[in-house]
Image (tube, rainbow, N blue to C red; front, side, top):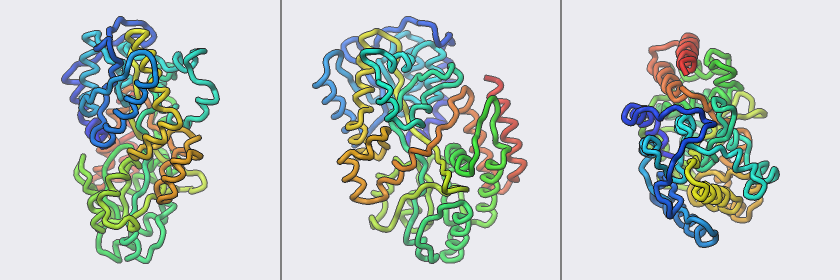
Length: 432
């Protein structure tokens, strides 16, 4: 998950370095051959303990299934994967599947290189039943449907997490606070109390477009509807006004881009709050010296009775090579996202199980019983939303981050910032 933050930069570099994929009608067939006809190669970025577990799951799958074996190929970070897949599309030679984000999948689909999962899911013999599909959280499925591609499903959920609030109980206690904030009004009040009690800002902000969008969701808003963005809406304006207030009162400060200084500050009792993907839990767990000194909560809401957060994470794209390669890849995807394996992957990595039935799994129950905070992120899945899967959205993300940075630096005013962001973002999407 950490490499996602580097992907935002590398994606733009990749477009320049490799050139755009050849544009095709996504429904047309283009002839691609397998990179390796003896295995179903899966290009991925998992490293360290996550990679060890992924290889173990893959080895067990290969031992229990007929057909082509799946081979995990560590292919660098997400930017590296994108560049290599794009080059392979030009060469007409592809792996069976690869980890991908929506912006990457859109480019692959434009080149006619990826398979529609709707066809795989609906297959009468090897597909998934309605009951099986209903067991997936709606957000993780909808995140893989592409409005620019007629709403078809061109990827399948792989590594998922949600934005949560990590908090330091020791810092809260210094301000006489015994529970994290449930609302944004309470969050602002607690930040002020912490500043008075400790003399320090309460929140070190990783300026990330997904965090801003999650705040807008939690304010009761949306970021896109129809053909236009909604950054001038009331929920968006409340978000920008809050960021401006936090900066003006020195209650929060931005950290350097692509660093994790906020997590370090949280562990050192310098700040009280850290907004990060739930998959960062294992890293924060390693940093904290006392397992009882910190917690995880849903992000604050304008209305706790109608909560919202944002869904993160990579997906899997299957490439349109041979029938044998497609069958092997689809078989692996089904096995990897099964209830048992989804739970095993979640416990071992910090990613979320993507099936509703995971709640009753004995291994999941034991894991949650070890510490209640381990369940918080899973409970947030039911109200998580994904960002728009639209051509041009990656550029819009950059505009969102520039807007937030300007607000935190005191060089922009909230009402005008929202209006300016909407105008420039709409222009980007219109060009697509």
